[in-house]
Image 1 (cartoon, helix red, strand yellow):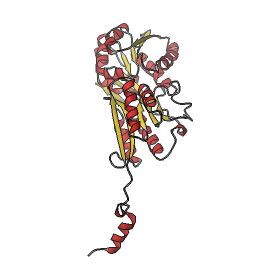
Image 2 (tube, rainbow, N blue to C red):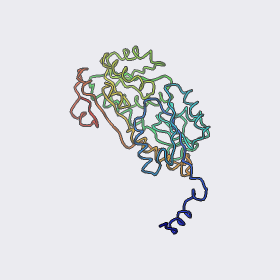
Image 3 (cartoon, rainbow, N blue to C red):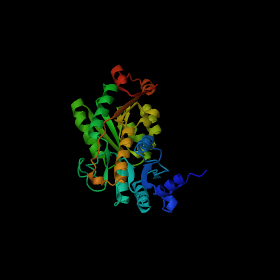
Image 4 (cartoon, one colour):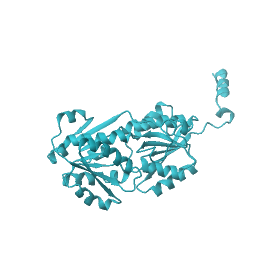
Length: 317
């Protein structure tokens, strides 16, 4: 028997029953480096908790870049033309590319190396413009990287710092390290390269000194090679991503990638609901991670102090 009352109620509450189209899913973009999705699953999960489900009421248009800021700008412009409500971009170089390629589209920054110094925002509290998101707190992370590395190599007098010459945050990175190096009575050697062909000579220049590799997409793609070179040249390495340690690098310390991506989901939710990016305070990380590769330490003849080992969130053996 047909329940006429149920049919009538369905007609009254269902837009489709009256020929009205269902609400279109929101559409957002993401310009990302190929193979660098650490924390992305946390982002999708956080969005789901906020009621946004990719493929249901949300479409995430992902675009991947191997290298080159020009390609990043082109893909951001493509996303702006779809159009998308906002664009996610991770890391200083990609954030700059997204901003330049899509100047009229809100940008959610993920782990900006130096959001203020790079000119992305006016202030952390009131960023202004079209950009907001998370910054890396490099002024805290980088000195801590130096301290932890000095604990693993206590006899070192010099620490080499490897940078990609094209990274706009280089001066910020190096200045943050320099201030702490003075307190630790360490000399810093700045080693900048422009392409991967210079990696071998660059690591050799460290001459066995501890080596800090600055966060950069070019270096991340070459993580296995850099880890091998640091071992071959007996240059204990400190890195900014877990992937390096998984590939054989000695140590990793940085703010949590999962935290950055989960926090980015909150920004996406607010912007999709009508918030203006420039009114949303930029967030600094509250969670940090340390990983140590004990197998690499043994290969290099390094004894990791028990106190340092206890600080590690993850140990590779």
